Length: 334
Image (cartoon, rainbow, N blue to C red; front, side, top):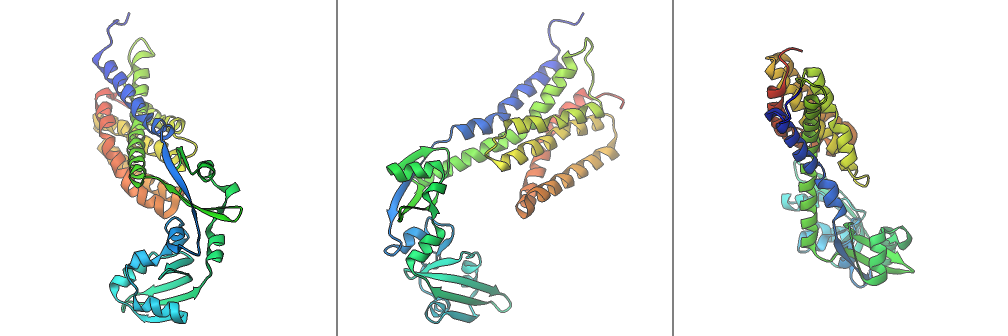
């Protein structure tokens, strides 16, 4: 009959499971508890071009971006076009202006620019547009606005879990909806990022802890972790991650299960190290790293590639804890 007092290994497995589940629940708990206040202000596009440009992602405020009038843009605004050399500083400030409309010296223009290097130059096309045309093009109808934006338009402000920012129109009246406190937005984003990071790691730790606990308590004699069993445990991070991710966050639905599985793969690596199977250990490490980045790229393109390059190495580092568990719980044979 097994001893009533659990062994140190069993306690260690249960402890990792508890820590993992706690971290795993950080993101859904934080996401459900976010409260951000947004305000709705009636705007007159013809009277204040900057007010519309500052809340619409489809209009760039060149007055703020450039700080002062610059000759190439002024010539394009006056004559309709400019094609010539520009200084490198101006080229850098115009590089990411990809909106159809801009505000320059308080007026709206339709914008198109092509930049070139060696020598640094630009081809700029600008044509004056009346405020009503721009407002109608960039505003979202009230009926299509997020619920929080609708409540803000109805009452002046609203509190909820959405970061709402934009221009909306109801019965011909335009409203700028934006967060009441920019610092609060930063805090929400920082908290969300931190809780997401905890959930990424938590999915892997929870899978490893729960899996090893099952191996320790299911049968009368505790079973060691073979490579096959460790692999099955690592895969368990996927359903755990999917269960914790919120359906509203596509990034979380992809990242938490995927990164969690990479973290949990540290258990397999630990078992291989315990068995001194160094060739397979190197192959696994390279395969997980390259495969993780490749999957991230296939799912989200260039942004996914960038995220994968950042997340996968971090997940490998976080996998050190499961790696240690693998070396301790690993079976001596395959």
